[in-house]
Length: 467
Image (cartoon, rainbow, N blue to C red; front, top):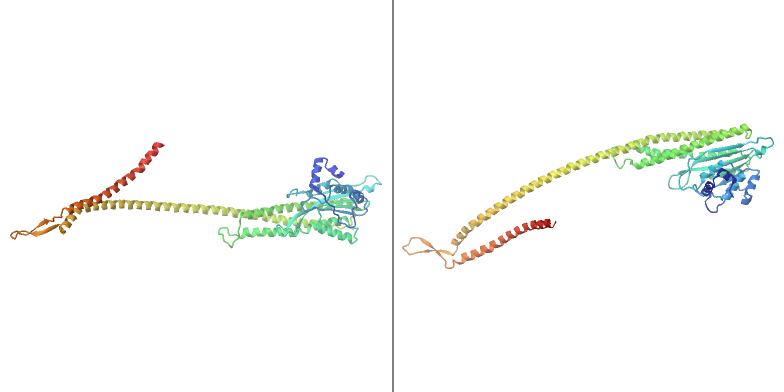
């Protein structure tokens, strides 16, 4: 069974199916109600029991989790809307509680109203009004890790019957504090509580965490502000603040939260003003007593304006801090570029000096090679000289040896004369043999050295011919 109210609101069947899948998904769910004294006997009797109730009816719809589906079947939800005869605008508010996988559709929060007044006498039983709004508020999620606050939402629907003086209420994902307070109020026997008191209670509970949330945002901003104001831009120290691009990212996330908070506060203020206008209109029509005090609603409006001013002040601070952080990062980046250029210049100078030193070393090596070549020529000359004087030394050695002897002649002869030994022939023969044995290896080494020098040239020529 699909509610006629849903069909009236969504003529397109595909769009209707899409909404129902987003709200309920697939599977069996259960319905939750706050008042234990009011039980729904069976789904088929649901519509009649709610319509015939002569007391205020409170229906609480819950989600499995914040982005989950409603814990109610499609058939039961349609019967609830039929029994309350809810106007189509309520479906727009309920669609905000559809299944989500990301933070989407977070900009819808408004207040809708409708007043039905009988135009003919005797039909006062048709006089009624409907009021529906979607409130967003911050709340502590209680998780130990991560951001401590999250923005929650709750939908409130009221249909007031002016003849029975009763209301039918539907609360979607109401805060636990609100449901507990309402349960305690009903269980204590306070059955004549004004509808405006219930609305004001919802406003008050939705407002109570705003101050702590804004203080937390301000404290988060002060950490970034302290970094930006007191960091040493030129000299980095381990004891100093560490300012990095991650701080700009953190500040941007904070600015995003502030923008969302301001939007939510604007919506809350508009909803409160719309409710105030709605109640004034009902008082003028005689459907609501004008004696009730609206001080609590005025206090709520004043507090919302105060919170909005606090958010705007934090936003102004974030603009200055964002500019300062950007300038610090740009200055450090430019300073780093300058230092890098200076380091490159120093490296270039060092490389130039190394090249000059290498050139000087090469020149010195060339001089040393030249000197070694000159020394080799000198050694060669000295070697030749030694070879030239070698025969003289040999002659001197011969005369000093026993190969040549001095002897006296006849007595009448004057002086002495040289006489060759009989084995003198051994000396020249042995000397010539030794000279041959000495010069043959020398000439062999010289020939081999020339051959090895010519070999790379031949190989290079052969490679060129092959190419």
